[in-house]
Image (cartoon, rainbow, N blue to C red; front, side):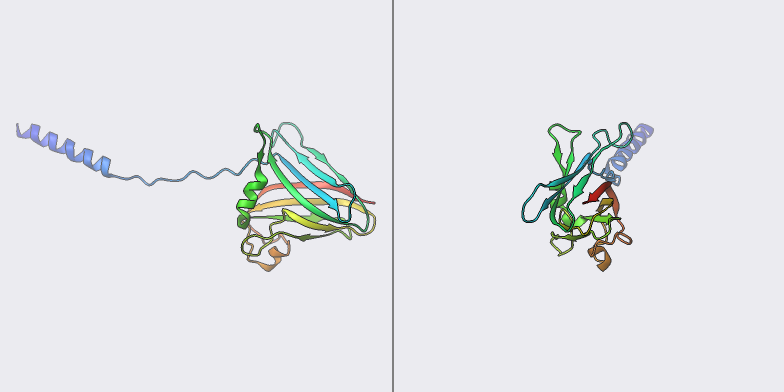
Length: 186
């Protein structure tokens, strides 16, 4: 009988031990949103036909090649620019732009160009006064051609002054999307 009591006591206390242990809960890493489409619409100030630079890759990395629509910009013209990001692998398409706006302090677009006399200025800011890049002013100079690369960084170090000025060199963070558009200024 004492052995039976000992066995039941051990069984009961071990069950308390196992049920009272609270294993550490580890949050799984958050997957970045799938961005299948980037549209950069450039509208001439003072009127005229807008130019849309577009990148679309519905099946993501691998598979089919992305569809890239380039654009012809007028020489010596100023444009207002607006970016739209979508996940068109879902139906209806998910508007990722809204997420960037909601998490504006965690995102910044960077613009790099090989086109001479092309300049770009941020026209939007997050709650801390740092640039986002969803809206811009783009100004062309004389006729030229080259590339315009648009990069969206997640969690860049926006406190660095060069990052606030659009220099990606020391921005850190992770690239959510990077697209290069061939453009021509005529």
